[in-house]
Amino acid sequence: MLSQVLSQLRLDVTTVVSSVLGRGPSPFVQRRPRRAARVAHTPSLGRPLQVDEVIRETEDTVSLVLSDPAGPLQFTPGQFFTLIVTVGGERLRRAYSASSEPGALGGRVRLTVRRQPEGRVSTHLVAHARAGDTLTALGPSGGFVPAAYAFPPHVLLVGGGSGITPLLSIARHLLACEPAKRVTLVFGNRRERDIPFRAELLALVAAHPGRLVVRHVLSEPEERWTEGVGMLTRDVLDRELDGLADALGGASADDTAAFLCGPEPMMRAARAALRGRGLTDDQIREEAFTSPASAGVAPKGPVELTFRVDGQSVRAVQAVGKTLLEAGLEAGLDLPYSCAMGGCGACKLHLVSGETTREGLALTPAERRAGLVLACSDRALGPCTLERPR
Image 1 (cartoon, rainbow, N blue to C red):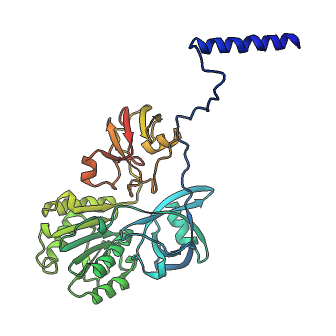
Image 2: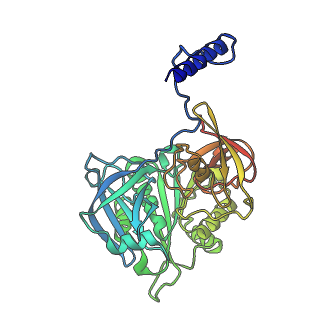
Image 3: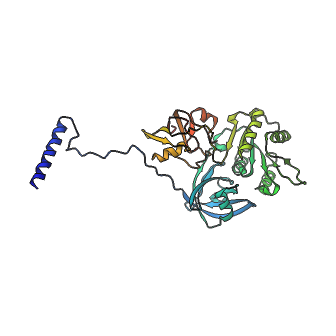
């Protein structure tokens, strides 16, 4: 026992001498534990929304009218909510746009879901969603909103299939709140029975004569069909827009802003058609809710990243096939995100140095030029430094 006391005394004396000589910290000063260099990741778990109604729009499309027990739901026309749904034991996220306008439905929101080929969540919701269910939701999210722009007199909406959902909310808002604006909708579907909201669109045209024009285009029409025919390719869109010249009231390119939502081939065709008519990229807004495909140039090995967050520099490694967001989350960073599919812009970061694949559709051309990237869809092509935009 005496030997242990003497040994501890020698250790304490050595520690004090080392401190006096500047070789170590003072034993008489209480040291705070060092803060971890990484920021703990605390992802949002979403909030519960109740399914009040399930409305069958078509054979493969339903609208879910959702309410928040905490109070009225706030959102902007064109925004979406991300639903977190468990299918087969796996938690999956899918983004669905509001097809209703803010303030309608007694403070509730209507999300419209169309069954997609091999779509696990859409198939589950179309088949199994029932009034009284509770769904977990994030949002609202997204910058596909008219409030962000000084609109010219004419707004052109081009939608395909379920792409009508945000466009319908935008159209309702413009007609109700922008009395000087005119709206034209070109809406493509497969068959007449596949057209969602047809009666609602007819009612809107009747309520706003001379301000709203709706042109339906079907790829597989029946013989009695009298409107547009074909897939919404560039040739078909050029033909339809030429045919709408009188209805457009001679609107020029400078007088028009365009909102596009639908399958990527349709949006490529619409972009080309509108650019051919003199619209600039800044006049064209797009929305898509498909997971971005890899650009095919991502590196075949791990890549070192540096994230600047809250004054700290945190190093991360982007594994093969991973995105910037996945690399940051795996490094313990609490990075913002919502849809995780390149559609909302919640995850945007400033690229300080390096190069990324530049995927996703949520950023405007001006934001791209300013060096912003989408963490949830972009992949680093080499070492990169990123920070949250100021």
